[in-house]
Length: 224
Image (cartoon, rainbow, N blue to C red; front, side, top):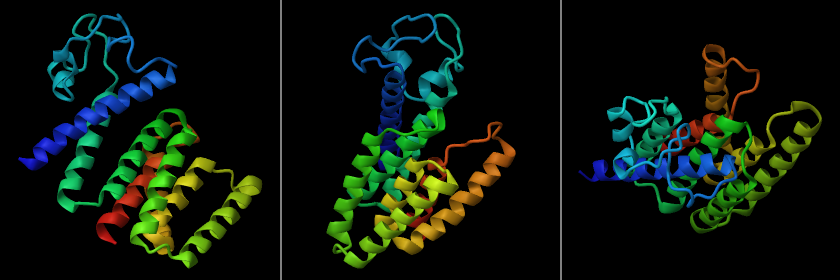
């Protein structure tokens, strides 16, 4: 029962995060206007806003104009619901769990825009540094190694590698939690899954990499 409640809370959060991202992309307020169909602009009733259930009952179409509802909405609701289920099983501390939620949000944005907002990266940095200082005892050696490696990779990236700077930021920020060896495991898993995805599904040359970093991060937290 506890897992079901957490899943419902997660889907509600996923629905809200999707709304915030959508409206931020349009430079709209998250308060006004009230939730509405993107096509016919008809205000939605509470029954139309129940996460997952509304989408399934309406068969993925607007109740009023029958236009197709973006599948990303229900996908995001399931992903956040799944994150809360993971929390119920593995009981991550609250800082780790917040970092997971931020990474999922960054993954969604990166998948949509191939870029990520700096403010979320800064928040993730604050969360992970706080965790590092509280639970890792502020290990200065690890911090120096990570900072040095980060500066080297960013410098190489500027001249040669040319991957997303946000990807590098996120990679080394999560390294504060999983350590240097964890970063290597994460990179192997993230690169492998990204290549498989690009081969099977991606039509464009560039793909979002933060979703695969998030997968590697979760793998480290659960199995390493």
